[in-house]
Image (cartoon, rainbow, N blue to C red; front, side, top):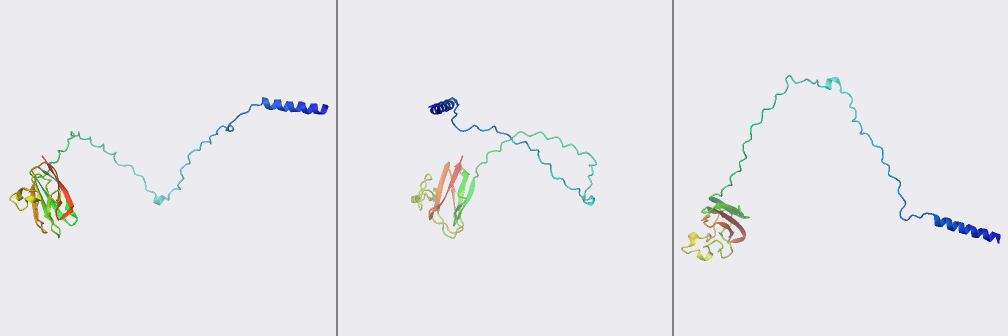
Length: 191
């Protein structure tokens, strides 16, 4: 019985020792960070002295440099005048389309279309096929006494031929080639 009492006392001692220890949960604590020692910058490599014949003597300037001239007073800033639209423009019909495809003229200005292509070109106001977007124009007026006043060549221009029209309505007016409607452009008319 003595032997069992010793085991019993030892068991109770272990049990009590385990209950009195502090238990921590979570990851183990990290040791404090130690910064690496700072490194000094490396010295530039030492160049061996050049041979005396290769060295150029340093000659100080004979006179000190002259002072720079005093700055001139600045002129007041002048905004450039807005560029006025021209009174005339020329558009060339080519195999690739109209060049330039867009122009700007003043009200009353004249635009001339010149056919540089091998195939005929028929410049006219949009919209294909009626040509009625520009006020007063329309394909139905071709061949009438109103033909001279409409934005429509009313025929295919042969290579080297031209058609001119004076724009009296302010706005952006689209045009096309009636014989090749995928070629188009615009004329902007300003006051």
